[in-house]
Amino acid sequence: MEYFTLNDGNKIPAVGFGVFMIPNDGSTYKAVTEALKAGYRHIDTASAYFNETEVGKAVKDSGIPREDIFVTSKLWLQDYGYEAAKKGIDASLQKLGFDYMDMYLLHQPYGDVAGAWKALEEAKGEGKIRSIGISNMTPGLYQKFVPQFTTKPAVNQVECNPLFQQKALRETMNTDDVRVECWYPLGHGSKELLENHVIARLAAKYNKNSGQIILRFEVQEGFIVLPKSTNPGRIAGNLDIFDFELKEAEMDEMRGLDTGKGTHDPEAPGVAEMLLGAFDIHAGK
Ligand code: A2P
Image 1 (cartoon, rainbow, N blue to C red):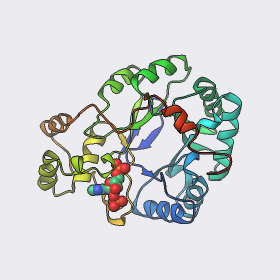
Image 2: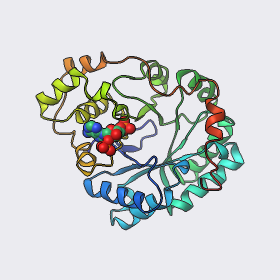
Image 3: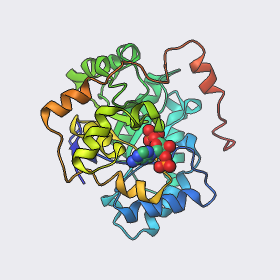
Image 4: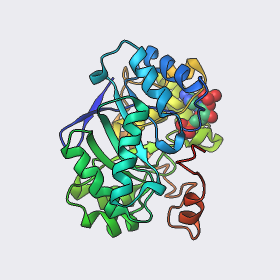
């Protein structure tokens, strides 16, 4: 496993296991247990995934020392604003059954972001959270919010894959040394990406599958990746990307696949309202 050093000095495993949409009915416990067995040491959850309790239980029951596993969770929109965020942070800690979280993110960039961020900064000062970050911030939203922050975010978790390499965002965040974390690092399984001829050729050359080439490219480019799979072979395989290296010319070829477009536009009209109404975090649904 490879680690990156964040701008706050903390280390994070380059590949993490995401549990978005896995229910809290035993399936999350099972998936996280399997992932830890396969060698993952980084789990990415969120209060809006409603499965923090099973993530925490699987981490505890694994027998792996707590400090060897990097766990991220996220604050949902309903808990934005300073006072609500303080409670939201404590609720996540309680559900996970932890006395600290390795990382905590503002899940969406709407509402009282500055107040919520202040609560994250304080919780970091108190040792409840080691690293704090943001998510789904475009260059425009980053410029709107982050200049007001005292502490710079360690990461911005956004949609990112070879077809959408977030070049403008990376340029915007460069001076603050904020690292990109990729959700949908495999383009959510899109054929356009997985069957791309450049990727297929590199897969044949290195005797890897297309997913592994994509993830290798992303990690070599400096991205933290959160690949999703329910297939045990691919869960293990997506971690097996550290025994080969893409050459600079191959990295350039992969960089050339960027279209500058993704599936989710956080600035599109109505998105903030749609997300705010998507869950009732306190009712657990
Ligand atoms: P499966 O669960 O059957 O493995 P993303 O992480 O970008 O959201 O992509 C997830 C999708 O990609 C899932 O449909 C998953 O299917 C598929 N997938 C995961 N790993 C690989 C891989 N190594 N090669 C091809 N497809 C993969």
